[in-house]
Length: 166
Image 1: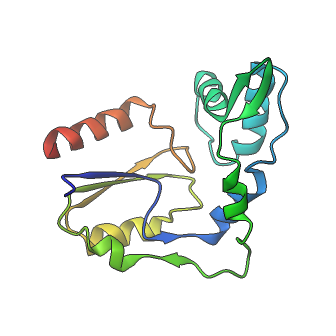
Image 2: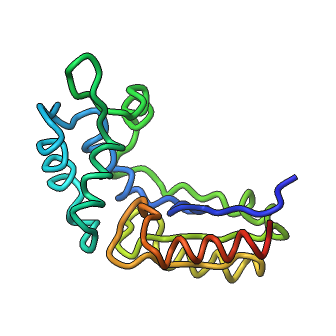
Image 3: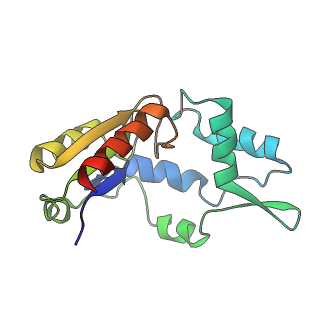
């Protein structure tokens, strides 16, 4: 059914610390008054995990995070996502879906991880390639969850993978 898969900073183990961080801002960011302010808000929220992106990337990130509707800036994320994350807490166990991932063992997979990701650990990424021989990995330097997929090296890596498996 699947010819190939590209996973962007997600895998069979989801680290609770990353979910808790996401819960801390989803649906809670202040509404900006203009695009410059939206960029400042996104930077303030995400700069610890995105340590090596350009001003143009920050602007693009802000424009994917917010949209202007009827002269007001609102978040683009599904408001119900905050409800889904409400149950997330420090005592929750890690989400582990190894059987589901291993069911894709014969599907060529490119697993992309942001170097600063707190959702997909380096250990999980390594284990993914160990358990599934058709799984390749790629780490995006200076980015967290989820990599923006805008840098030339990452775009070329995805293109090479798709060309080889498409």
